[in-house]
Length: 355
Image (cartoon, rainbow, N blue to C red; front, top):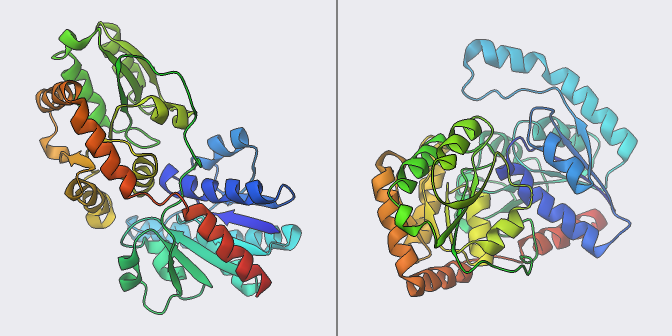
């Protein structure tokens, strides 16, 4: 079996594909896998560490870039399509899986021109721009939500769930301290970063009981590191957490955005969370994700514009004092999980390749 994963750009697009790639390898050590993305995307940093080969395209997005940006992006389409045809000719895939993001478009279009079986993965309730364009052409669309089919008329939709990167979390020794994991997506979240810095000034009475792991993103790392250095907490602060599975395994409570991949991981592994939806996400899909967990008692939602250091400090204090509530939230999250999503997608891809 030879499989191309096309697209990426952000962790929300890449990590579900990485989960499926790992499931292919788990089943068959002889499977050949190639990722195709861009040098600007997160895939350029992550995939070499994961042992997967990456080819790159020079391609730009169209949505929201204005007329000049659209014309610039369209100018590069023929070269990207030609490069995609060359990659397919050399690699000879049995199946191409689009992960979303604009880099997936040329590969999937080239795949259809070469009569290769093609599928796409849609992580959010409402499909993104590229996936909506491609859905009618491909052989399968794998979605995290059954309601996504309403936005994809004519597509062959399978509700698989959103794959997560690990089959299970590692068994690691945990501190007796209350462990708080903070991140804002692969690029960080300024609003969360600085609200946390303000909150910790009000939580110094917990300094002997609280351990913090904080992924800041590259831009805010120097300022947030300086803020931590003046506080009496035990902490690990980094621009990017490479071993996120270990960070999840240690966490009693997670403070984060509400992207589809994050929500899938929280539910698959049963982690209580305070969710701060990114307010500028297309179709406001992060708010819908957070509301779904809050309604089931699996998380608490704080809107971005309502996030302050004082409010955050009050909530962290409350959770530190009420472990039973955390356990109920974790159980509710676990009940919503779809840990078999990657396996379901791999099953369907093998069936497609044999058809």
